[in-house]
Image (cartoon, rainbow, N blue to C red; front, side, top):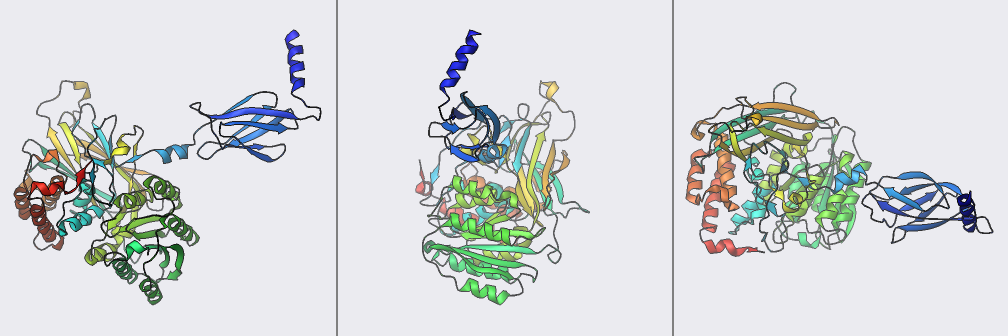
Length: 590
C-alpha cells in the first residue's frame, strides 16, 4: 500500500497544472548503440519528432497513454503503445534490405576459408580494385567453392591497350577469367528448351606435370534477334572535358552510331548527357528514326566537369518512365569513369545503383580512355547494375562489342548466375580456381557473399581449376565420396524476366586426357590462362618463361581466327615489354 501511495504522488509530479505529460526515452540499435535522427510519429497529435545527436528524446503529450511509430532509414519500423510517465527504451532492428546492401559481394568463395593479403600496385591516376589471387584449397577441409558467372570482358582489351603502348600491365588490371572468356571458346548450343549447356574436361597441366586442369564450360542459348522483345535503351554519355580526346568521345560516338544502325522499329533510344550539367539530349525515339538518333549523337561535344552521380539518377528515372514490360530495358553508360561532381566514391556509387537493381533495368558500362581511366568504378557499377562491362580500346573493339556480339552484350538470357562445385576428396587432394579473384576489402568481411551475374545470349563462360589429384584415399574415410566423379556442380540462375531461381545439377566425370588430346579450344584457354598468370607474376606458374608460353600458344592457336592471331602478337609484345626486369618496376608497390 505504501509503495502504491509513493508511486501515486510521484506520478502527480509529472503532471503540470495544464494537464500535459512529458515523455522521455532513447532509441538504440541491437548492439546498444544510440541512434540519432530517428523519426518518432505521435499518433494522437499526428506530429513528428526526431531523436537528438545522443539518440534521446523528450516529447510533450496531452495523454498519459499514447502510441508511437519510430522509423530510421536502414532499420525496421516499430510501432508501440507507451505510458508517458515511463522511460522508454526503443530498439530498432537493421532491415534485411540494409543487411544485404551493406554486405560485400564476392566473385568466388570457399566456405570458412581465411585468405591472405597481398601488396598493391599503383598505375598513375588509373584505379583498379586490389585483387587477392585464389590459393590452393584442401578438399577434405573445404570441398565446396562457389563463384559468379558473367560476361565481362573488359580486362582483355585493357591489357591489350597497355601492351600496345609498350607498358607493363598493373597486376590488378588482369582478371584471368575475363581474358579466357573474351574468346567465347567451345560454344555448344543447349538442347531443347534448356537455357544452358554444361560440359567439363579433365586434362594434364602444361605448366606443372604434377597437376591437372579441370575445365568447366557453360554455354547459353542463342536468341533470335528478330524475335526478342523490344529494347528500351538509354544512352548515358559522358561529354565532360576529360572525354575530349580521339580515343574517348569520338570513339564512343562512332560506337553508338554502329549500334543504332542495328536497331529495329520496335526499339527505342533516349540519350542522357553529362558534362558541366545533366541533360536529356534526346527524348525516347523509335529505332525507325535512325537519322534523327545519329544526328543527335554526332552533335555532341566535350566540355565541363563530370556530374556522374546525378546523371545516373536521371538515366534511371528516364528508363523507368519509358519502361517496357518484359522488354530489354537497359542503360548503356559510356565514360572514362572519372566522376568529379557529387558522389564519386565506389562505395557511394555502389549503393546508388544497388537501389535500382530490382527495377528490371540493366546497366551496361563501356569504358574508354587512358591515364585517368577508372576501371574500379565501372566494374562495380556494372556488377551492381545487374549488367556487364566492356573496355573499348579502339574502333575494332567497339564494333565487336556493339555489332558482332550484340546479343551477347545487350540481350540477357539469365540473371544472378552463379556456380557451386563440390570436389570429391577421394580423387582431388587440392584445387585452385584460376581467376575469379576477389577484392581485398571483400575478403576481409567475413559476411561477404557470392553475387551472381548476367549472362547474355550465345555466351560461353569457362572456368579453369588447377587440381592436385589424390594418389591414394585420405585417412578420414567418413569424408570420402566413393563416387568415381571428380566433383558435382550446382548451377543456379534466374531466367530473364522471371523471379524464381532455378538450378542445374551436373556430375563431373573423370574423363582425363593428356592436354594434347583434348579439344583445341580448351588448350587455347590454357594458353590464355598462362598469359594472365605471367602478367600477374603468379607464384603458381612455376617460373615458366615467355618463350615457353609463346611456343605453347602457337601450337594451339587457330591461324584463321583473327583474335587468336592478335593474341600471339600480344604475347610477343609482352615478351619485349617484360624482357628487362627493371621494366616491371615501372609501377610502384606501396
